[in-house]
Length: 132
Image 1 (spheres, rainbow, N blue to C red):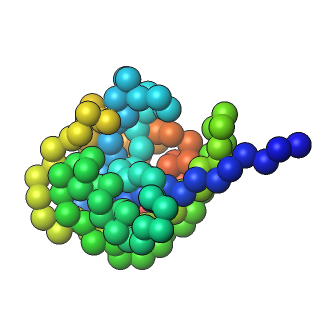
Image 2: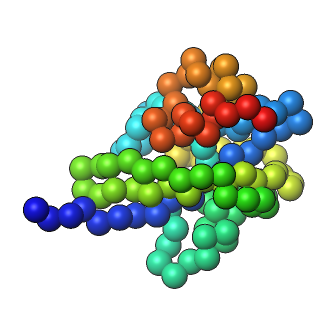
């Protein structure tokens, strides 16, 4: 049995003043999970600091500057060619206005109840279901 390689992805759980979490909807053209909602973030490049990777990915996807606050938890999902380990951070938006890249078609601030009704990727559900 050949084990699949692991990949590391970092995600940001950003809350607004009302305690709602910022989620982004994957483009319909996305290779994985098209049209589903997820936390912003992405893969860590080889030898890249994970905090810098999170800031870079969020800036690329949303055009905003964030500051990681703490590790909120971890999750994983198995794809056909690899296992992705997700490290989720609580983060604070510092500056900027949300401008989506072509990776995502929409962004929304959702309460736990709203996220519970949305088509959220499975690994994100526990992180958006938690109350503020």
